[in-house]
Image (cartoon, rainbow, N blue to C red; front, side, top):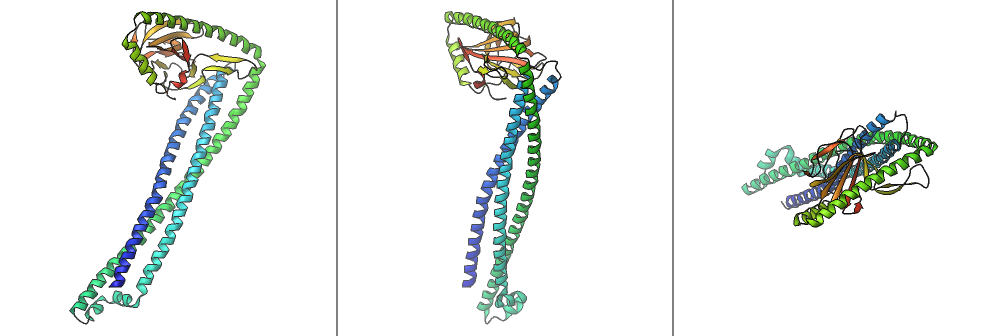
Length: 399
């Protein structure tokens, strides 16, 4: 009787230990799974960008003259290609860690299973248990008295329950082992797939990098033509900037005469939307960022940008990033239609529109269509606070 009580206690301790170990093993695997899922979502997001840029490159690669726009598209493609390679490497690292962890768990379960089987076999080898298991009837009727009979019957039931519990633990471990083996197999298959995708992306990256270097050499040969283009673009940019300043200054004068709490409230709301504004176009990439930049091919030459240039699909809709009022609307050489929305002390500028759907003085809502971009898919966007130019990229959510 004492032997059985100790055995039951030992069995309970084994089960508690087993469940605790199982929880500690499952938790990191759950976290790994979450991390891998996040990485995979990010990889698919970058791939969609690569596919978008690939489409643009295909449409422009047969142009008569190679332009900086094509070069920027290719540079964006290379940037995203490197990101997807880094992402794949991170996924490969995660999978390798999972395989090692699963292998360690598998080895531990094998050891536990062997110990349980050994313990179970030792239990059955006991002569009096063997006798009882072979002929329970004889074991019971050979009792010396009624009390001894009841003790033996109770003993057999306890022994039966104990052996069933042992067998159940062994079965559970066997099922867990099979599950882990299947997971290791799947992880290795995923690893091989990702390694193949990584190699494919590395090969494409090498081709794109070589093409970029060829284009740079080609553009450097046409330096005189590029300088003439830059001068023309500078004149157009200065004209755009002058028109924007004139419209904003005129708007500010009008605001001083009619200052109200509503204008202040709109300014505060706009400020709180930093990094949260939806981009004015549904998708695309920034082909030229805000501020002063070195020219990619001509040494000593810098390019200035008062906003950001976005490359998107031809004929894309342009939408208001925030509630506002149309402060200005005009057609400017090199920038097509340009319109300015007022948001309290802030202004957003939308240019290179092929057509517009609103008029000066109109009230617009966030997300409302303002117009369309032309066939070239190029769009220019600026953000001002009164007379100061701001970096639009820090106000927008990432594409």
